[in-house]
Image (cartoon, rainbow, N blue to C red; front, side, top):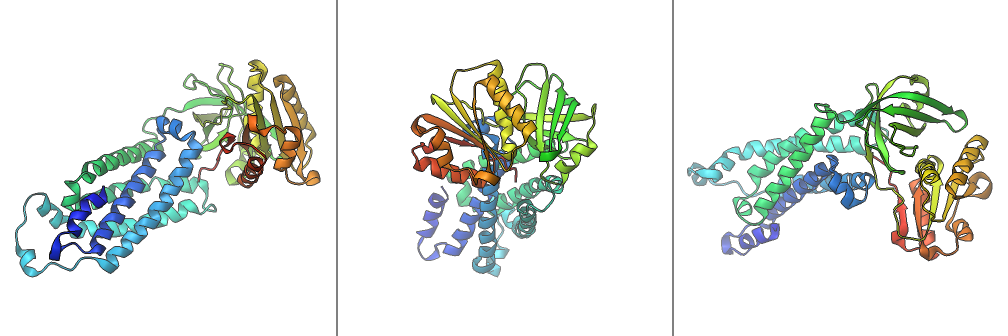
Length: 419
């Protein structure tokens, strides 16, 4: 659409538009579209989660749209510095211009200055978002600053986009995309400042700390705003004034408002919970999210978990214990060493669900490989594989299993990374 607006200018004879000017316009259009799409995803629209097969996939796309925007915006910013159009002569400056053209001419310098400052702000915010060492609570508090920055860049884009582009097919489409981006941004602001709060409120009714594996099991009684969940989904949990953190739901839904989470100590926040939380504390839960739901048409399933990735499979086993579906399941759980108490509980849930449990201790047997799985389930062409665990482990297993006959589309993986 941008090219269709530019071609008449390129083919316009001696006064044809310079390539540098067109390049600035094109990179500017692409940058504002990328940022708009990123903000639409940040608003977490449910219908888009269905299209993209889970909030984890939405956040991955949101992240890469943001990175792509950063690169394109950098090119656009540099293009303005090196190839901007020649200054108009004095006679042109003196000529009165009315209508929209007159307005944009009058706003030109302001829009350029604002865009320049906003780009620097985007650069800083993007770096903070990408640096994992930057604390999550501060990331959460600073990330919403993208929204006012984006609204400023809409003004920049509206003023500096050529009139010929606004009157082409590109104009109305770009207007709709930016309006949707503004909606997404305002929705994020609304949620960040909690002007409306649709989170379920509950109280902690049970706390169990497994010291050997530094993992906390938290049971919460939620109010009627929690409408239930499916095994494998996750939710955002807020305690005190801390920003919401995503955790996989451990419990199967029984309709009584009880929800439990298994929380591994992996950072500053999670490492404090076992010491700071107590029975009766109020928590807020938003969700459920995710499409790691074990729905498939394959006659057999293979589950593979690494470490705390065991959580969605525990929830599924507890669900199958109450509602068996008759589908054979082989569950491979990899952990460095035996953990007798946890292994016993896993075996109990597996027996109740009719699941074949295979424990793999990597300190003794080495890293779990596709060959380990195929040795137990050789017919990989007719199974679905559900994996939750370290990303590198998942990538290696998928590559190996596909080589051994698993259709690539039948490998399901939760990309449980919010940054």
